[in-house]
Length: 318
Length: 318
Image (cartoon, rainbow over all chains, first blue to last red; front, top):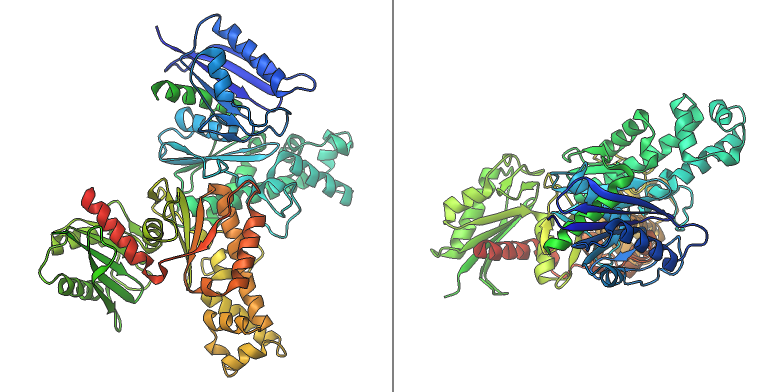
């Protein structure tokens, strides 16, 4: 009998548990878990444990892989904190899971695990090295180098979202000016479009129409949709994001010369023009001798869960 | 008897050959080689071969390590080209050395080999990962990750000099605006100070004095020396370099989170104020969770030759 693997994805407020046979590529079971109101680490853990027990139906997993939406000390499997849910400070998640399910657990942060998922099963298969980016509410990143997740000395590597690409740009939540995240994340794309709509009452008619002139309803997705329908103000707001990502990715290529760069997250679903600008700027930013291979993620929102499966597989063989 | 290692450093116009016992840290012999007028790959090779034969005095080395000032395909030990000397296009240097001296040879480019030298014998000893920068006529860089030089898929990794830190900055030789090299290399520091002296006739009196008002005599070193003597125009020109390096290094730390960053090259000998600004800007650019450990190189101009020794040692044991 094939041994069972348990894969867990702790997102901000949406979590997923899945079980799969070792070496399989189809789920035996798969369950979404919603945090509900005022979640804590304790309540989220209990819900995930319950979902996992239901999926396992009494069986014991051979290993557990976990993607966690926040900083993690991967070697010990300890969560440092969550930016969304209180109570996650220094939780030894791998140990808790081992106690609960009697199996070894590997835990890493979501950008790293998603990178690992794309590398093992998705758009990064067969590449010697990848940079993975997810561009949505924030801009996260993870490296796979030489068949391993690269963590860095503090477990913090991959923070392309907070590399500076325009030192005279607007101020980011992190306090710096012109970070990639400040220019390219969904909420900041929306904020930029909103500011331009206020400043330029004659422009952005398609965008205004989509929102019935309610500027508070604007989101990154709405901006992308208006741009696709030919709204030039919306396209301008989106283009800044593509430009910033192009510089950030070009700089990353200059530094690390990865075989491939893989982009996931809602903002990267903004159409051909977006991708064209991003690739052009990255091409111009990197030295001409460098390979430029920038592709969409293949696993979409499931990348962290598939990465967790890959982590669990290695946990078995370790 | 200890086996002998041959270490070669092919610079732009100055080269060095050295021999050393395997495991030793003192040279048995050491010889500088000058290219002379209109050098070619052929003439430089002959001079280096002659110097090495003289040092070896009939003995056979156990292995050869080589630092080359230009892009190298490290796995095969093939030089791609030299930016200074014609005739180096696709020269299989490792093979030529093996034929000439009957020993295996490892060849890599100078920034990588210097990084390796600092990692093995200098300021990077004991670190899990380093970024090495050399800031002089250009800005080069090399990574050591997980006890290995990181080459990247095209052997081009480490090009921090051509990461963009100010997209509205002045145009670099590479065609882009605001590269680290455009803002921080010695010749460009000199150019900036010269432009400011022309524009601001009342400023830079100390700097003008050092050069007897001959603006063509200005170099990065002269700017640094005037800054040390209190010339505020000179310090301003230098400060831009420190700022650009700080952003570039901070961005690199965000991406890779290395244990240490090591800086060599003439420009980094520009005094405490220079280092203070550089470290401050890097600290502000990197996320607060990241280690910031930025130190001067320990091996100075000998880093490539010591790196070549380390390469040769591994060549023996490989």
